[in-house]
Image (cartoon, rainbow, N blue to C red; front, side, top):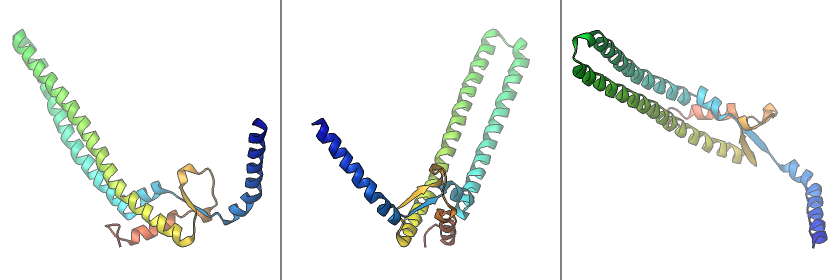
Amino acid sequence: MKRTLTSGLAAVLLALTLTAPAAAADFKMGVIDVQFILNTSKRGQEAKRLLTEERDFRMQKLRERKETLDKNIADLDKRRAALSPEAFRKEQEKLLADQQQFGAMLQEVQGGLAQKEQELTRDIVEDVQQLVEQIAKKEGLDMVVEKSAVVYTLPKYDLTERVMKSYDSRGATGKK
């Protein structure tokens, strides 16, 4: 049994060795740098601008809230001697609740921004994948891989610029 398995494995390896060069000659591959397209395409730059505006707006609101919170903490510290221990404790508890609420707001903003970025980039990536598929079919490519997963490739296999030009020519909606 062991001998039959070894003989069978050897036969398969021999067949692969003999047919691999012929198959490799017909195999056509391309690479694409999706991150480059996300960063430099018109829609990618617009998405980045929108995200930056959203982040700046939300962060300004958080800064204002933090300044108010810090001012209230400093004010309570100044009034500590004038307050009864019970009144101080009540105001301190209120400020602690405000701090916790601020922390929750900060997490909400961060999560919201991450979700917004994901939404904006998902649409772009889906459009780019469709373009890559069209180009691959048109050029008879067997496989297209993400450039970040490739250690080395000849520049002639890089589809990134062609895909980005085609993508940008489709306009702001990404459809044509």
